[in-house]
Length: 466
Ligand code: AMP
Ligand code: ZN
Image (cartoon, rainbow, N blue to C red; front, side, top):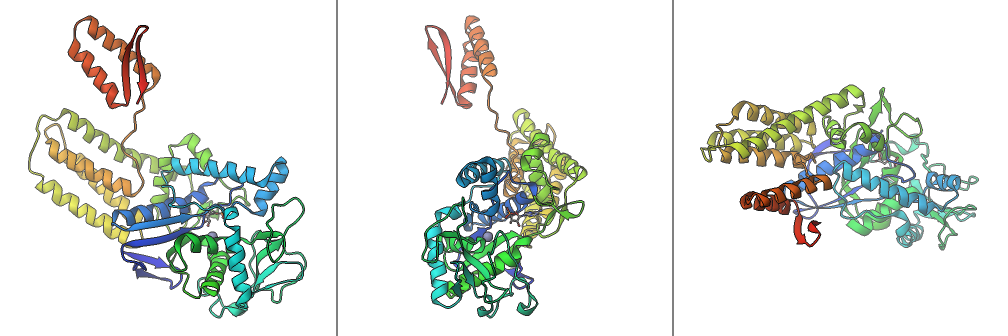
């Protein structure tokens, strides 16, 4: 498996630190609003990378944080007249609902920045002790950027050409030794959440949060660190500086960055106001369509969002669904039980190889999807009422397997509505009246299969969910 590593600007053979195990950290969203579909891109593409590694038998420890203390959260809380934690909790819950809709697996751990403050204070103290950080008069702690000799190695920037990049950091006065220095801890302001620390009452800077959560849940050195390409500089560059200075070992071996989701070739972002939330898209489309749309491009390429492309993702997905539904129908109605699977197997193997080659080549989901379409076309051309059940079952199993790696759900979970259940109960009563006990039993079993048990009571037949 080869992964494009931003650090070396090349595709490298993936070798985990510990054989068979992968430690992966993905920078998560700042939770002050519903996530937009640009934020959904890293969630979907790195979830797919994770699913593929699981398929390859790797044990993936996947950590993705929620940034739950930030100026934008605080401003929103002030606007609504509530505590910042009310805002962050609300949007973490909403984000998790969107992730579920997108079929993004929950992370092994979803740490919250506000729950890890003592560890952040520890790391900042270590950096001060080692001379990599200093406390300014007002209590702000800065990282001494020039101390880190290889600073700029991820973003491939020369330290002398750099201007200090900042995000969510309000510096009061210029107490820095050098304009390149960045904030690790900042003093509290009126009405803002704060924590006590040896430096001053205040809160952490954004970059230190990820360094600490990665260390705590995955260790000092990890296999993969990922996020959108806007995070390369300064966020990830600063994470490297902090973690490597504090821990004395390389931070992450592979750095993966997804390209932007654009609209009219401009990055979709909250600040430009050119965004759609996942919720808005869900009103018009099944979120599986959004997932399929995202995977139709390579994760590192820019992807332009448009109604046309969503429509074509929708019809592509429908083609796969139609084939799958047809196989299920044929299995239920096939008269031929068994025949040689040799030819089908040979073709499926060639498809699996194409799929794996594509995914092994830096998770090329676009080519992996082409392989799935090839399988779909083959199944359409080679199946009819005469196809035997064992061959159909093979197609079904492999199509499900490949789609599952992409996080595409083919099996519809049918949940019976109360009125459907009542109708079936009535039909069963009717069958009993006509002494058609076989049919009555059949209906009872059908309901049981769907998790519903029937009980005969004095008031008639009642049902309950198992
Ligand atoms: P934020 O909440 O802005 O910190 O973003 C959370 C994640 O979404 C980060 O990994 C960002 O890089 C990513 N992201 C934000 N906007 C876009 C976009 N338009 N396209 C792709 N990724 C994005
Ligand atoms: Zn981060």
